[in-house]
Length: 512
Image 1 (tube, one colour):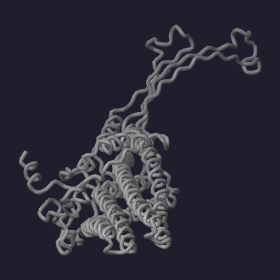
Image 2 (spheres, one colour):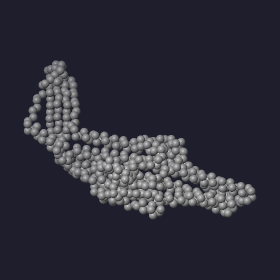
Image 3 (cartoon, one colour):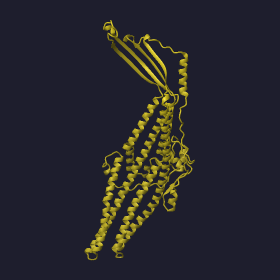
Image 4 (cartoon, helix red, strand yellow):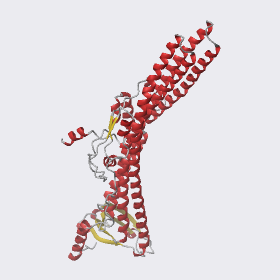
């Protein structure tokens, strides 16, 4: 094979092109975070709600923490200190075990993790486009020409053997940044998948804690119904004994029995709801529906609620919310894809090279005179495809505009969700306090009514009315406790992993 020689000007041109590639700027817009106005404080003043209604629960918020400048910090900035494992404040080992199991085994989280792994794999693939593609090739052949092709030659003279081996390299010179923009887009997509995984963790933990709180609340309401049924059963026994002794009436007995049956009718619905909630918790921890019936059947009190919650500031909230981070990363990715599409307006340069050996005799394959080599610069530029390219650019522009709108909507939704959670939690604690007092007073009134009935000071109607009021008040209080706890869980979910530490703790952390 003829030894190819390249002139010094050609080599200098190739070197200059490589240098230009390494220093070139990428076409398309550079991403900058949208400047959205963010309030310095929450509108919902849950602390004022609590104080106005005499509730003992304190809900505090800091106005001096980071993020009070009305801007959204970068998702890459350090997050403010937060009580991520908020459920541990309930001091319930069973709840801790359920949450730990869900974080490891929950199917939704495993699906989100697989999507994160997929996005990371695509990012690694995109990074390889920055490097040359190197392939190895080898051929060994035996051909025979026909007598028409080589007339007058013997059969063995028409046989040809050939051998070659080569290494081929191809490298796209990223002059206009198409590859770099693609890597940038894939990196943002991977970051969005990571944020999606974090959001899924927040959602699953919130659902586990909420379901557990609802379970304990249903068990408490079931206990209240059974306890009241026992009291009403005792009242019926007394009334029946009086009737048997000739001192009562069938009317009183029928009324007492009707109230008992009404109370007993509530028990099956509560028992069914308890089982359904246990099934839900089992599935959330990737177990068959009946797996937790024995573990959770033992009734325990509702978890105690913390007396103070520091919701931080809206700026801190938006730094912690993974859905906001995911929306911003997707906006970044969409912006980078504009550069990928824009790069197609310009020529694409490819540097190729080959080094190998070729021979008609296998014994001479790697001899000095059998070597082959090639270096080439390719240019690919379609002048007639500009219309399609501009259409793709317009499509990516539209996608970026939609991603910006999605980001703005996600920010507003996060603020709305947190404001609503603060409001609901504040009012729920107020309602909780009033219903607790009502339950205590109704229980005391029912006891007094029974004592006075035994003494003949009141009739049976007063006793039945006090027992009915006691059942309603105790059931309403148990239900309110559940709603207060679930409101706290919703607040946790809206704060995306808990609430910031209090000011003293934050200052101590900042001095480390």
